[in-house]
Image: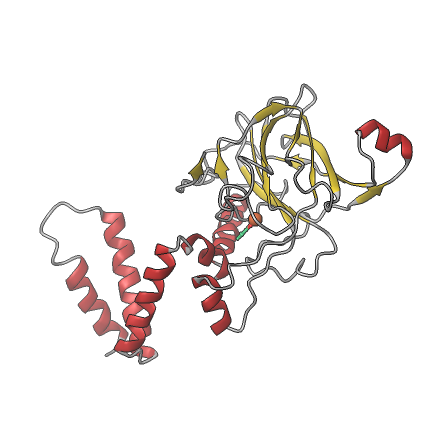
Length: 306
Ligand code: MBD
Ligand code: FE
């Protein structure tokens, strides 16, 4: 079959046979996706057994709630970021803190405090390096933004996230911090380890067939939002991680790898109330003004809440 034959056929199934009120956007998208799939089946001579293998794969991935993990693993979440960057550039928005993917592990409802929070429950204090991270949230004119919301979440020493890992305490390593009168935020936590896809899960199964690993470098996630500003979804990566530029989710970006300063002098330790050297990370967030010319940066998707 030619691609033209396929286009005609698929249109007859999806659009021309519609006799009831329809959603034109859904029609347009389904027409395109089914057509592109049929063309791939034709061009690659995909056999029925292969088609059903693929369908059964997606069914299993869905049942295991891994489609939100497969999406970054296939680069699709990164692709949406590239498109969002391009849309902002077209709307005249340049600079600011780079965005990077949200990933599947955010949980709404974390405890909120103003200015400062401790994220970790202390359960890994023996083994973990202590981290103090702090900075200012700025608008595009360089004005600090008091009352901005900094939502932060990251993995523990095993690369696992609370809520999804039921062995951790409620909201461990998850907090919402409202910036103080100077637009400053700060938190104490532990140095995270990188996440690895569940070794026996659907995502890793496909990555194996593609000859790819399923590891992420150690990282800390952020949503940063403020009145009249575009919501920023981003992460920082921990410098020195072996996967820093080899992330299975393609989320590493220039500008999101802040220097880590190791602090060990007695006065600083006393001031912070810690008894061993810690890592200090300074990182400011630069937001864009909310403008109508750019598509919303507030992405709607089903998120866990606790
Ligand atoms: C993560 O922690 C993550 O950030 C992404 C994008 C995918 C899987 C696990
Ligand atoms: Fe993550």
